[in-house]
Image (cartoon, rainbow, N blue to C red; front, top):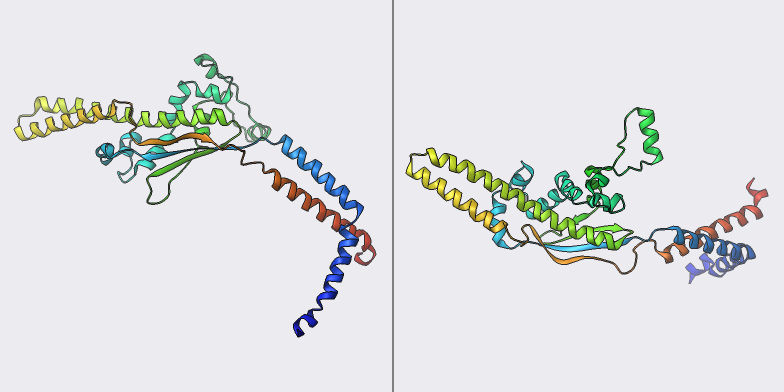
Length: 298
């Protein structure tokens, strides 16, 4: 009880009430709240809704593991160690320029940056819209900007697709934020399929190269043990090719196909209205306080 007396709670409540009636519960506050509502409506109307598009993948069946053990990352990227897992290999391929080139040749550059015309002559000459800051930087520093979009631009767009995997789990989630959810669903599905197909093609090329070189060695080999080992290698590579020349997934297969959230994740209308009202109301209170106490303050 002595603590409450020292605090003098009734007096604090009375002061707070007086401040509220003097600074908040005034006509200006109504005008300010109305202005904040108008601003919030303008922000929401002029903002592009962002949707969350995602897909869930899973590491392919154990039938593909022998090929992974031989070094998927090395076979696909021409280097690296064999410790890269399936997910890392998939991510590396997905973000690579070579995949961007494949998708560019399929016309995806036109769909992303142009009008969707699949004529090669068109999508190789789509004018690039450089913003003012880039043009100004190029003028000041004396370097040239690309006049047309290229596969490098498409590579940057593909990199906007994020990939995540929880430790110890086989499921992989790829996702992106977009204003055009229908196109992004189609594009994400194409990226998944193209990445897996590209992985297969590279491994098939590698196996064909090994077979060709092994046949050359087998033709000149006079040692029966070496010839047997070479023949075994050829059979093994043919087996790999047989496993790759099908429509089955190689690295990851789709559990949950690309889909979009029903409602946009941004902008949040409630958060915009609330934050705008608080900001305007605080500004109004500060202005009223300064106006009423300007002589003491100055």
